[in-house]
Length: 93
Image 1 (tube, one colour):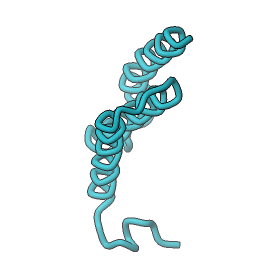
Image 2 (cartoon, rainbow, N blue to C red; image 1 turned 180 degrees about the horizontal axis):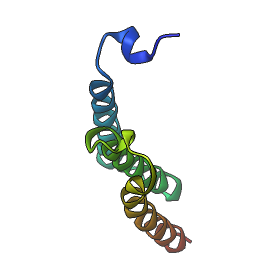
Image 3 (cartoon, rainbow, N blue to C red; image 1 turned 60 degrees about the vertical axis):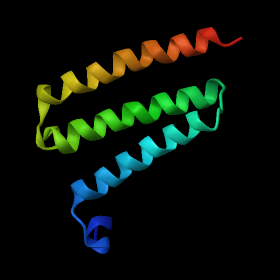
């Protein structure tokens, strides 16, 4: 079975880059349209965390690394993500 990047004829990093652009466009449109709410705020935060993980894996070269070298980026994203998510959750009535 072929990968999606092979079927489309583009490199995996290009596919990830297009995904990052689509995530950024989604968060921009959510803000531009004035949507709000806890669920939407958490979705935007989740997209930001996914974007950070994709950048770490594909563009910083951590996708090919095993062991302890993957943990700093994950922890750097996970701890602030949890704290910001809790702040969003506690601030909504």
